[in-house]
Image 1: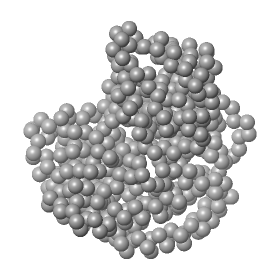
Image 2: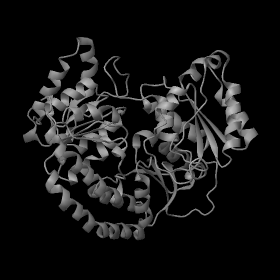
Image 3: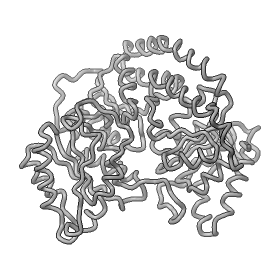
Image 4: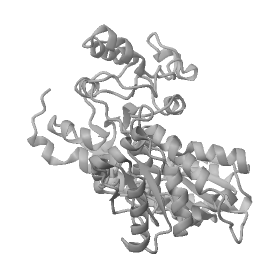
Length: 486
């Protein structure tokens, strides 16, 4: 059960020795150890303030054959950015396989009547066949758009999420979309998110952001703009997260004009260019559109974190500082209002979780944003990493963890298995593909992509649920009945 800087580096060296020379050379740049927090703890490493290892290699192609957990550009666009917009039909344009796989969403909860004005729970596919590959699918796409308009008259628009074959055969979805928009009188948005583009789902986020920029943003007019108008950017309302966040912001005195894209609406997304501040939660998936609005419309953006009371309080004060004294005063009132209930949660669960060690491997924002919530419960994150991060994600992550923490990018199944066996954490938080592997190893696990059918985890509503779920995972008596391989 090693955790010092020196011992953590020895663990990585031992794991890398299992690879052939070529693979080892490619993988070693993706694995790092956070330097010690102070010079006296450095054990040969530099203090954290110098952050000599922040430059973890990232956003490059995975090594073939090492079982990456990444997704594709289609997953990043359809599954993350566009899919949670509730009042549009999102058409998976291509063979049925990709659409079928993505049918089970990340529990992006949405208001409205399913099939009438809420299409999030459904999967629509153009069901490409061999003849479509040979002769092209333009006519089929037109027919489907007309059918959607007839069957779902309340749908405000259609997004065409292109799968790999669309790019390979060169179908002009842009021309078809333009034609259908004019004919049907609703927005039809082409999204060139073929899965082979880029190295992971991250490019799909970027492509989706660009399609929103070109076809949605700025197309509406906010009738009554005010000084407290904000937008929630990059919250996908998993288990109701966006609702919990919106509740806090409205109690603060702000008006949430739009949510991107959990429980999102096409018409409110068109108004986002009129807000006074963009509040970005998942930096990785939505920083592109936030930066565009800053450049094009002079709208500042602020990254916030509503996981756990410490980060909620810090974020509330940071958000309030962008507004006048009234909002700042409201922030302090909210903090004081909820502190007793948060203290009650900590008094209940912290004695049961104090000192427990966690390893994380997720996407988006979670590998760093949830660290504070674990620390509130007295737990320590001893390993964390991203599936599809960029360099700026790791620069934001290193200051959040302590010395000796292992940092890993696009970790392979072999590496993750070995890290868990050697570090032996009390809890692993990762995705559905990893869940049953570690549970069979006798390691408590929480599915941290979609909260393991629980949630919300954001905000004051979410932290009690988060604490309960972590306690339930770690302290369940069932682990006494499982014999771990180590």
